Image 1 (cartoon, rainbow, N blue to C red):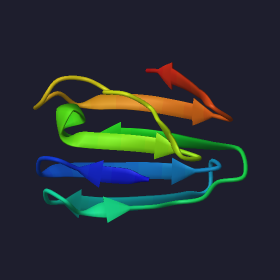
Image 2 (image 1 turned 180 degrees about the vertical axis):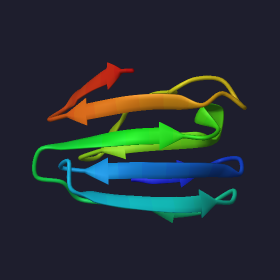
Image 3 (image 1 turned 30 degrees about the vertical axis):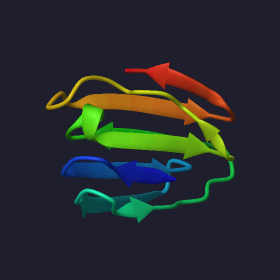
Length: 79
């Protein structure tokens, strides 16, 4: 689950197959399911709160910074 606290563009690649994009405004949320992994690109890392299987993933970076992260299982890998 990705929830916006600030406006942010997000893109997710699911299991090396599907690509989804969203422009989130504060309080918007999106949820995706994967079998193996996600590859996230966040246009405003500080404006997104992320949860994986109910666990908070913590901040991905400061406001205004573009961040790419790969999530495999329950491991977050920076790119």
